[in-house]
Image (tube, rainbow, N blue to C red; front, side):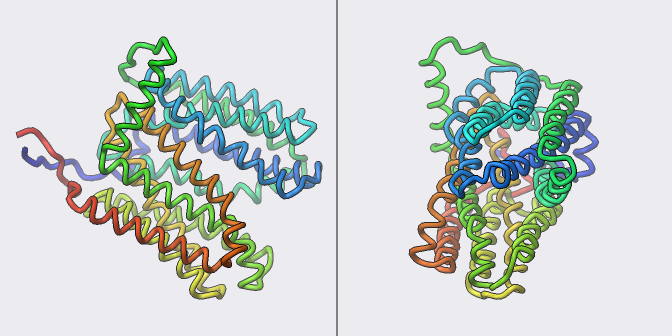
Length: 414
């Protein structure tokens, strides 16, 4: 074996010059913005029009997460066998219909059913998008490509609540559903102009073949040292983030003695930290392996959570929330890039779908257990426990991956 130098990482500006990625980015910029508007409108309808209980409100997120937890591994199998461009366009058009139907809902169960259906279709779009990025972006641009795509989500998380609130106040929740419906058409149109050259294997023709493909994807994940750690680390990270986020309002109220304004400000700071973090990712990638960036991101999230728990004042909370977002970017973006780089192209849909499943399950578990556990041991003790869990996983990952290939080289046949 011998090592061969690789091209330097591409910047955000460089990857956005790639025609296909630029169209995908624009389409997702519009679509994700529309999704945030629709989610805000749904919460507004259940909370104020239907006077829903806390349980009914919480079921909104559960209805959205469940398909990703259970359907995503199956969807990934088909994504590996289907034309990804057609899959994404069909997904957008079908979801536009479901979003349009929100205009006519009359009870919470109709909302849950539509959310579940919309999310189920999304389980096909997300892995197809990951396959598309891997296909149209050169290897040295994957980190920045994933970074700019994640920035859409982080940015919309910051600006959409204020815009959605204004739209709901002026024009009612239906305005958000109309805009989200239109956003899917914009996304489908942008994707239609992307050239994606990828060999597609023959279609599956039996249930047993689908199960076999799922098992092969799972086996690959658990037998590949880097991928198995990335899945474990990302799951632990999103579990801690979800458990932390589920209780931050109570932490502000009971520990910091603050109000709604402080709670909203802290939530915004997390998104700001994520956006800032993505700006530094490709620079760090020049000197550090992506696997160790994942380890560092996991450790950083633990430190940020520990700061918030150890120092109960507003200044520490501001530092902790900014740090939390900054380090989350270093966990999420390199993890996605490693999945794309280390997974054989023919298995990327299955592996991506399985990773989505594990991540969403971790989020559901985090949402479910955070409240009862915090009530039993206290919020700050829960934060300490989350930090310790992340430290332990990061330590195991550090020793497990210490021989991972350094940046700037790749293994080549002698």
